[in-house]
Image (cartoon, rainbow, N blue to C red; front, side, top):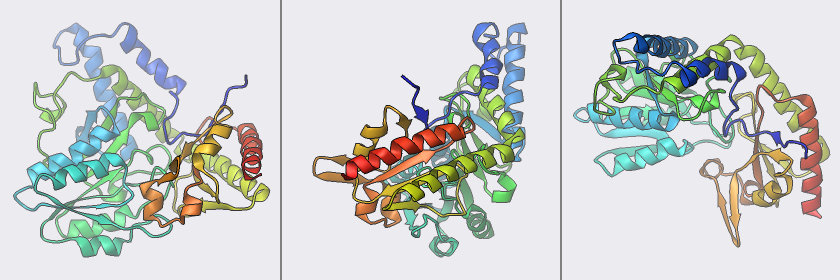
Length: 379
């Protein structure tokens, strides 16, 4: 059987070969604890600090502003909870958007049960937050705004810099979940104006189970995890050297080839969209047409069900659904709901995301599969 075509790079990415090679010594021979003062701790300690510098480089930050975590979800949790804890005496209001990843939305709901109020900003039909709405929501009680850099479902890039500027004028901290944007589009902390930024290793061709949180110098969050004092005393626990090294190498590769990779991913995405538009009626593209990730295509097929389409194409094309259909119930994603995509379109939404390894031949094969499957289901 021919291996299925992988078009779910926003779900996760394969390990870059260079990442595997960089990690290998720390799996095979360099087993030491980086906190140890003897010989066996030297190489691991150097490797962790080298990786910290590489993550800082792709973000345009400083090594001392990077704290390693277990992934984007943990980074988001720490960003919101630790600022809430350290700034509680200043205010108890947080602003976010309706289309955030659950790793932000569920944290905000948790905070609502612990003395905080949260404003959930709406988005327009393209999935964009209006900076004016964010500014209008700011009060004297607002301590933190968390708006994702790029939406994971439709790829829309948010006006983070504009919102951050308004927040800075009021002394409000700005966090962005950049799990989907690092390695695909420029994600420089000074250009974005953010105080905290979350990174996920497995979205940038690095390993799963590792991430980073950028914390701008001068920002003083509460301690994430108490213990022996690793990671500037914010997140105790022996460092995951193997995966930290992998994340650092992944960021180094992504930074070197960012423009080339983005252009390639966009070309493959556009080839897919153009092919579907030419071959099928009743196709709709979701998300902003210009302000979006270079690799993301959210596509609705009118009056079809996403689950059935995935069943049809699943052995040949790997993609993800924007709606789950069970018996007589259709669960449309919170992102498409917030964008007010009509139900007859939203329930038939699939997300296809290209990657550095995607080829034109794969796209053309995927088109054959998708088009024939849609036509079959419509019959």
